[in-house]
Image 1 (cartoon, one colour):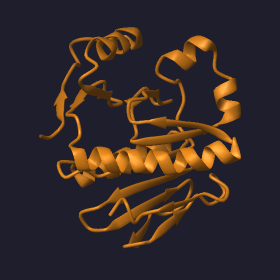
Image 2: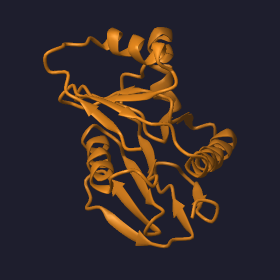
Image 3: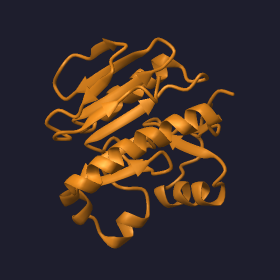
Length: 190
């Protein structure tokens, strides 16, 4: 099942209304692009869900040791500076960004762009759409992003101010200067 995009140009949904829509329909995953279109994403299958968990687990273990930031799973909404509402499969922000948010901001969709994101391509995901989403993250402040494409066993690495790098069948990925000393092992992801 593919994502469905609904044109809401005739309806101006506020951020609060969008948040309530998401809260009232927890079985669905919603995003909103910069044009205000509502994107309804189906739940993932078991294989993708397992791999998403593995990604979050690896990052979470590293973060628990380093205590450098806050990790988020795919159910977390981010209100990007361009106005889009996105939910990456995995996200991370430095602890100081979290501490600068009010309690209310921490409880709703976070009004910022993650410093680090991962998108894992599921069998039904359109690659071009995911690539555009990754570029949107960069344009809004993400410093490092990985688009993991299991179908081709490729990883597209997105870095602030640099051309996208494509890695073929890597064993691991480095968190570079964003996630110091983090290495994502891809064996369980492939």
